[in-house]
Image (cartoon, rainbow over all chains, first blue to last red; front, top):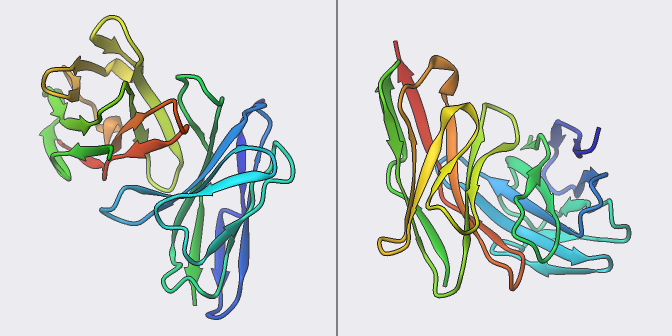
Length: 113
Length: 113
């Protein structure tokens, strides 16, 4: 079945550590996105990529980094520079340049301990 | 700048009663509109989308939405809700020129017995 897989579902991190969240899709989508979700704040865009080896900052990119070395993969690294990383992270993908909807993974809940 | 406003953060409604979740958007360019549903600790699932054509859009689970260009609104409605509709609902607007999808802050639907 085609879809988007995020792993792990739950992640615990000690303060000061970097951590990488995985996002893989087999939908052959060009565009991929990372959103952060906090209660009452909706989804806020962290980074997005429209093509391999290229990505753009979203609204809250500080403290995060991404790479897009393969079309199907768009990992997100939460660095120690992110002051409040505890949140639910959602990865999405969609066909580029069309009026199609985004497809979402099941999310990763990151908790800093 | 483009934005999406969901006018109610929470909406309580009795089971089998009708419900309307409100969404207004602002944009100076052509847009396409979505409603997504999120069940606890899961990703987002598309309910319906408006691209062009008929202003009344039907989606899954008995939901429908009406696009009103003059009022820049895209309200979601269901004539009779069920306990299984308990979830958070997100309105979103997309645009072609940069592949971004902008989300509202969400409306939590509480179904009362």
